[in-house]
Length: 318
Image (cartoon, rainbow, N blue to C red; front, side, top):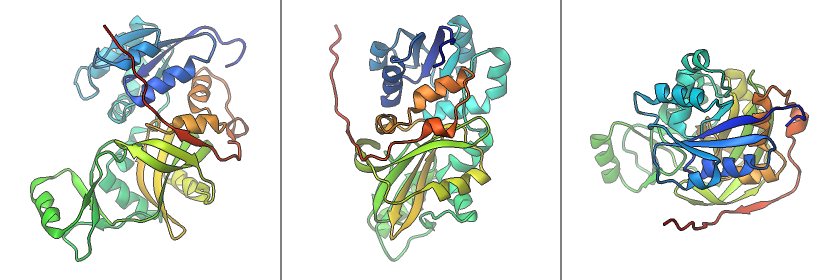
């Protein structure tokens, strides 16, 4: 952060999860930053990593926006970093109301981008329309299994289910309305973490292989630049406006990247590897929101292969 930046208050939304805890640890390294956390539960490990823990209702609660505005005013929050998928969408949808009520700065993709890419069924159709490779959408029972089932709206891959036969497939079709089925793609699975500016210009990106996951979040991930995803990112950025941190997931099969997820938020597991690779998205975002001009040169990753291992650590509370 620039030498003349005053003391700032940063609020991390939904700070009880992996992302919120990591953001607090990362931003702790910055001078003149007071870190606040907000979560709907008072039983959260996130409170051990912030200067002050606050309560907010869940993002789905009709009172969420009003409570958020009240908290931003009361604690004089300068910068707000929402982390949960639904939280970011609700904030994007109510951007004008929030910005008209407080001086707090935040950066999110426009709500129009959410509407076209947040629902996996709709995203698949929209991506295919502009020539982005995606798994084939399956609407009826097929001859060849397995296939993949996903909730139309959900975080990452934690609710991905493999369907082994037509009996199970038909049972889900008859009982569930909020799911979609897709062709099974075989290959290495990647995530690319990106930082975009206010105008939707891609400032930097880091692509990494998802080696092992737990509950949808990576526990082992490593840099892999054998295939450069940049041309595909540029194609999507000409169709939709992305702002702030966005991550894309794809599977590389026979040299073709099949996009399986677009998350308009911070990644839930592998962000520490991207930071270690030279693209420190959390700090760069804070600097951007403080008014500093962030350039692509400042967001270049280092061409060195790194592997990240995530592990659990315990805190005993009495």
